[in-house]
Image 1 (cartoon, rainbow, N blue to C red):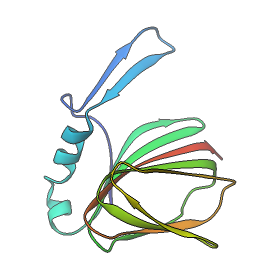
Image 2 (spheres, helix red, strand yellow; image 1 turned 90 degrees about the horizontal axis):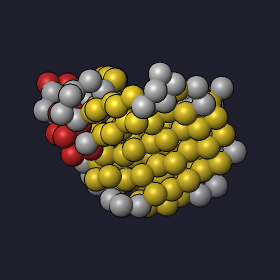
Image 3 (tube, one colour; image 1 turned 90 degrees about the vertical axis):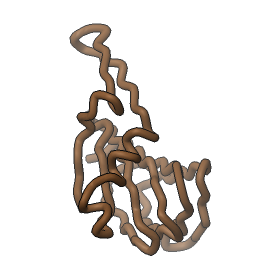
Length: 131
């Protein structure tokens, strides 16, 4: 798995309003195109870009090939998963759901989960209150 922080000027821009706050804007289609244009992606590896990593919150964009499985790795109180492209099967110990492009799932209470890409898929994962 290759993890990157965003750095492409065309895909990511930051405009500081003051020293303490920043407005961050992400061009998801450009980021996804850049992710899928790498040697590691073409070799079959998943690609991950950390869009935001601040105390208590992380936003991660991940591109997965069909059949890729992800097990929970977070110790967070809250998770939001948005399917940008593709389809996944999302599972917890007691439930499973198919999610398609454009759908969002939320999960609270630090529940272990896993998901499998049912086709080439891009997900946007937001983790909150991580310890």
